[in-house]
Image (tube, rainbow over all chains, first blue to last red; front, side, top):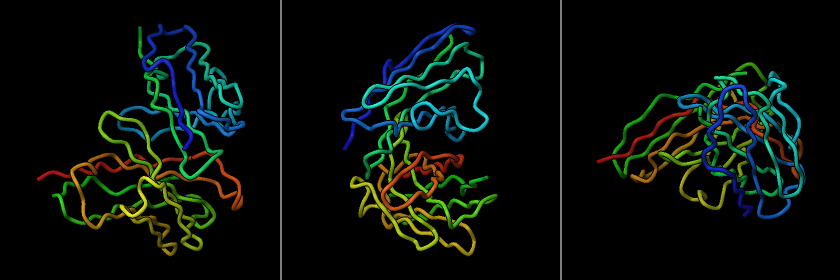
Length: 108
Length: 122
């Protein structure tokens, strides 16, 4: 099973600033890496697939990079609606698909 | 695309339960439906998936034998069921759609349901 490790667990950032979230895989997942945004009481939302492709309707301030074992999600200028928990997920080696433990992005 | 999940459930240990996920706005039989667990205060765990066209299933080793995933393609609905619930099954359960790209490839989960809260308590 591939273990996904996200850092930091909590990130405090002011609105308008940049946020950088990291995700590391225990072995290569190629570019089969997705990022999801999850707000309490809501369905998770796909942001990034294929490590760097934005999903339909996702604003350009969200960008993903990386391949192999190291990945980054960058939010260029934080808006109030961006404060949420973010999960990475690998879909290269399955079963099982595995998620990181999440990064909580909170308002500083 | 919409995935509509059944409502919250409160059950006692040992009881059985089936929760549902109804897809609309797309061809239900041409996409996988996955089930994902979120225990209180924890992250996301993949449980398994079903291809409604032929009801082929694939389970996470962690959940194999503990739950059953099924689907009724005539009503575009997938199910997750337990025969004997435990307190540790208390969680939110999400269904999520996944594009079918062949037997040897895999994709992201592009649409998710809002979740069903299952509480198991004596």
